[in-house]
Image 1 (cartoon, rainbow, N blue to C red):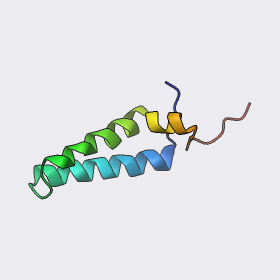
Image 2 (image 1 turned 60 degrees about the horizontal axis):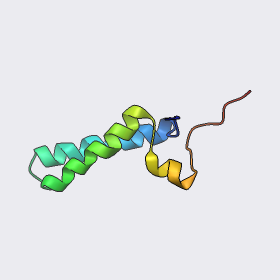
Image 3 (image 1 turned 30 degrees about the horizontal axis):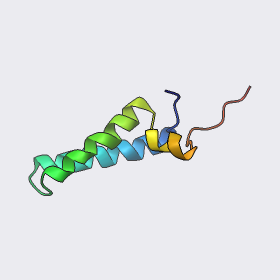
Image 4 (image 1 turned 120 degrees about the vertical axis):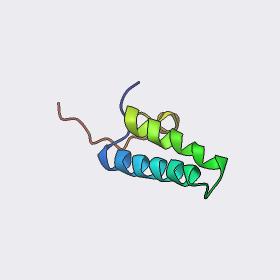
Length: 64
C-alpha cells in the first residue's frame, strides 16, 4: 500500500469520519453514521483504495 491521501485530504476525512460517528452515538442519524469509520481509517492509513482504482493521488509529488 502506497500512500495516496495527502495532508489536507486526511484532515477532512478525519473530521467527516469523527462527525458521522459522533452523530451516530448521539442518536441523530442512526446506524448509517457508522460509515464514518471508513474515512477515519483511510485518513489514519493514508491510503484510499478508490484513489488507487482511479489512478488518483492527493499527496504532493516527491522530489528526487
